[in-house]
Length: 183
Image 1 (cartoon, one colour):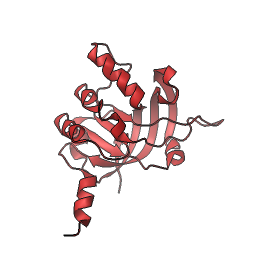
Image 2 (tube, one colour):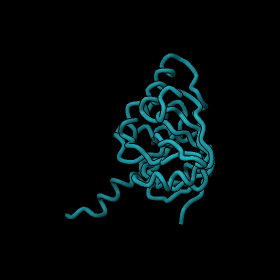
Image 3 (cartoon, one colour):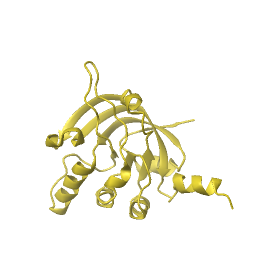
Image 4 (cartoon, one colour):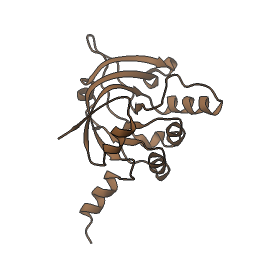
């Protein structure tokens, strides 16, 4: 049974989530990929404000395809999270509490997730058309010149994800390998 959560994330919600939990997210999340992450970290390094209040928010590592007529957004599947690993600890230190993508995270990111009490969710790769049906509104909020990689504010309803890394150091990918390891 899926756990339903709403954004922004709060400490109580984060404390309840464990690696392996199936979650349905409702509320606002932000979409951003590598180029936007680079700009955000550069802004923080210069002491500048970010284009949105990152505190307690979730960033979805996604660059959508163009929307067809009558649609809010095109296909909206996850991109490989490791491409954001260089930037993630800085954004977690600034207050980011959740990330959605696909694939493993580096040891540095997993340490930062635990240190800053955040969570990493995985979305199903290859299901971008289905994921887009959970997005009720999408608007560019920053870095429009980046095209598909611009930062978008997304309003989602029952967006399906799985907790991979939790605030306690749980790691579903490592737990899965250990469970099926042949001795």
